[in-house]
Amino acid sequence: MEQQGKVTVPIFTEIDTEVFLRDIYPERRPAVLRGARLGPCLEKWTVEYLGQSGGDKEVKIHVSTVPQMDFLRKNFAYKTLPFCEFVKRASEKKHSDLFLCEDERYYLRSLGEDEPADLRKQFPGLAEDFHIPQFFESNLFFSSVFRISSCGLQLWTHYDVMDNLLAQVTGTKRVALYSPQDALHLYLSGKWPCEDASLFNCSKYTFVKAKRYECVLEPGDLLFIPALWFHNTLALQFGVGVNVFGRHLPADSYDRKDPYGNEDPAAATRALQALERALRTLDELPEDYRDFYGRRNSCL
Image (cartoon, rainbow, N blue to C red; front, side, top):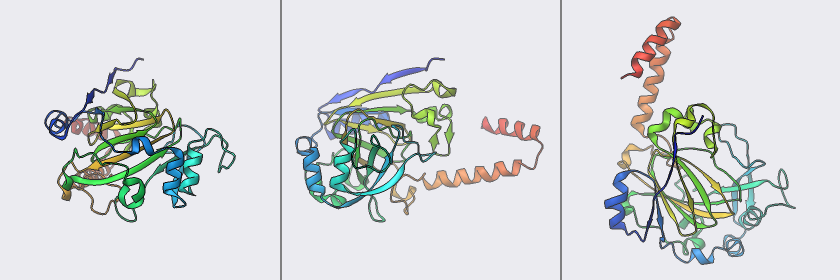
């Protein structure tokens, strides 16, 4: 069974804030912004420079023995390393110092202390090299997340509830995306699709009915990922990037206690909880009745 279709994410060059807000942002579709002015990080962020700048600061990382990390099965371990040692290992293909196996893969997502991640707070020295893209109004800014991954590492498919500008600083990365309108075809288990949806060449289940949008990010590229678009990434090389998240809804729509900024909006959470209660009520009826009323309500 062949997949419905693959679409190459459009590339726009030398886009300024005015053009982005007028022509790209309202479309609510992914777009690669090439030639973004990200600052001296594009030249400076070598493995050696990163290690020296980050020093012995301890970071919590994901370590996986397989290329595809799966959030549902939790097929990775959380470990702690000095940042300089982490960068050294993440840039290697084979390891003499290791946790699980000699070809284990590493992933860092920077964290704040009970607050959203902010590159300027967690890594102030490196933050001086990175110019946060000014495509969101300053009052919409939520977080800037520093990410580093080993070559070959693939993150699980997921969606974010805020708009996302993924800045690729070093290395190349392949990104696959799926429209929120294809959610029914992604075999969701809560917020995440089944593990097959993480694969770039999946050929199972109704997942093949979903249209895949795909791009390869080069150093200096920005990928605009609108809120609710499913996506997964595959590091084609050791790579460093920064995600800049901005609110798409009014601030009071989001869970204020969520430092990751990825909990469903409060109204959606209330609606889902009401739906679960309604479905439990239907359990009082025989199976044929449950089937009938479930189908009837799916047409609403």
